[in-house]
Amino acid sequence: MPAMQRPGQGRLPSLPPRPGRRAAPGAGLQLPACPAGSREAERPRTAMAMAMAWRAAPRAAARLLLGRRGIASCIDPSTGLTEDQKEFQKVALDFAAKEMAPYMAEWDEKEIFPVKTMRKAAQLGFGGIYVKPDVGGSGLSRLDTSIIFEALSTGCTSTTAYMSIHNMCVWMIDTFGNEEQRRRFCPSLCSMEKFASYCLTEPGSGSDAASLLTSAQRKGDTYVLNGSKAFISGGGDTDVYVVMCRTGGPGPKGISCLVLEKGMPGLSFGKKEKKVGWNSQPTRAVIFEDCVVPVGNRLGAEGQGFSIAMQGLNGGRINIASCSLGAAHASVLLAQEHLSVRKQFGEPLANNQYLQFRLAEMATRLVAARLMVRNAARALQDGREDAAVLCSMAKLFATDECFRICNQALQMHGGYGYLKDYAVQQFVRDIRVHQILEGTNEVMRMIVARNLLQG
Image (cartoon, rainbow, N blue to C red):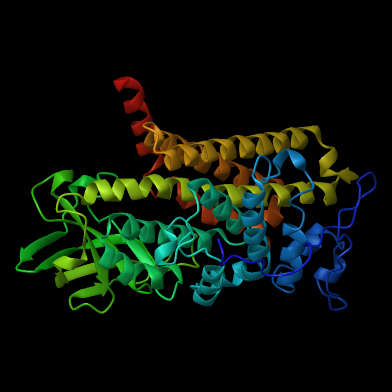
């Protein structure tokens, strides 16, 4: 990937060593001094102080947190990777630590869509990770993509999740578009000069996507769209909309896929939704009122839209599961550090065997989920017959287990975990929706069960 370069020099700093632990390279970073008499000044200069300093000194705090990744080898996300994959991962981790984590809380609180940061990520090749290089993509594999999204998600899960949806849209145009469409849309999307949204869900059709009602009536060399889409990530702020609409009869075979551009007459947007998490990306309804779209904007043939949508979602499920892995990995590190420095009953919480067992379970579930996601990514890349069901299994397991990990990490923080000064609560809020979107986990169970019973 020629465009990918390290966005910085040297190693990330790590925490000072505790007795009995070998010092990591770059150990000994000091947090900025707190004003005398402040709440922060009264607390130990430890990971707990780091968490409270997340806003006051976000860059130092984020680097202090994310620099700890390699210490516990049993959860090391680079295990089993090739040297090239480790390099991609290192670039993504550095970017997450320096360009995302320091601003994660601000983006969440102020509901900022971080366009400039995402365009910086695109300069590293993250705007079209698994898109072909001839239209500006990086041409990497599904496994490479999973590794990158997991790493980026340690810095901001919400922003990374939007980037994963954007990547899915660009891949759909690259894969199912004709040569003219590929060259018209993909270069500006890969550079993130323009941003994309995926439009499948409707107010009356969520899990039952094949029952969608948005209509596209053919009139000469155009389609006239009427209807609406719900819960669209990026809606109103993005430039390109990959829309599933009904051009034929009922059921999946009557669905086609059109690419719309912001500014087309008849295309409008609902109010910006107020959400529990995912606040660094806007969510709105997308509304079509006699919206005229050229036939030349249709991807594939009429009636192919549902197949295109499902193939896109197979990769989308791996992507969103990978984002869950990053949030869970960061939460394990936060919990690990909190247990080491927080004292109750005269000793660190880390000495409590019950909490030791829970931390061990969190780490075990994290590694199991990571292996499952990477196995599904390989299957999808290889075009295996069981790829779709493996993607469903991985999405089900990883998003369920990673939410449990983040939630348990919050519980380990006690009352502090419920304060917005502590990053763990944001991981919990941002990751919760992963069990709902890209196909609910109940639908994932249906897909797996159907595969087993039909076998």
